[in-house]
Image 1: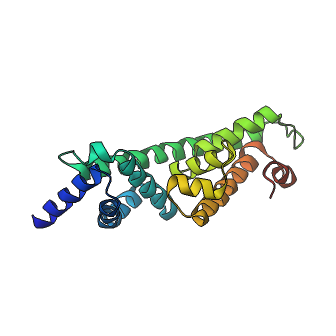
Image 2: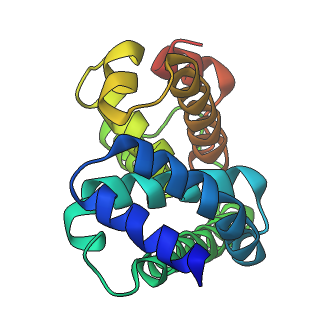
Image 3: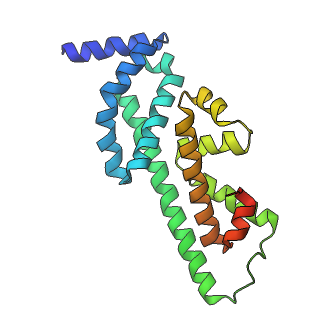
Length: 195
C-alpha cells in the first residue's frame, strides 16, 4: 500500500511537470511494460520503440494523466494500443507483400527502373507508414522537415546517437521494402537515399 501511495504521489508531481518524478515513473514501469509489450510484438527493438512512444505520450499528457485515479492503467492502455497498431500494420504489410509477390510471379517482368517518381514516392510513403511510431516520427522530422540529428534529439529528448541509429534502421527498412514491392535495383536505391 505504501508503494502504491508513493507512486500516486509521483504521478501528482508529474502533473505539475516534475522531471525527477517522470524519471522515477519511467524506471518503475519500464521493466513492467517490457514483457507486456514483448508478448504482443515478439520483437525487442519494436518493444523498445513502443515503450519510448508510451512514455513520450505520458510526458505530453502529464497534466491530465497525473490527475487520473488510475494513471498506470492509462500507461498500459497506450502501450497496448500502440502494440495493436503495430501488429495491424505488420499483418497488412505481409498481405500486401504476398499479393505483390503473387502478381510478380504471374505478370510479365518489366524492365527495372520503370516505376515513375510518383510511384516510388508512394512506395516510400507506404514503407514509412509501416515503421514503428517513434522511428516514423524521427524519419519524418529528418526527411520531411529537414531537421538535423541534434535538432531532432533536442525536440524528442533523445541522444543524437539514438536519432542516427533510428534513421539508419528506418532507411534500411525502406530500401528493403522498395526492393520487394517495387523491384528497384540497388544502384537506383543509392541514387534515392545517397548510401
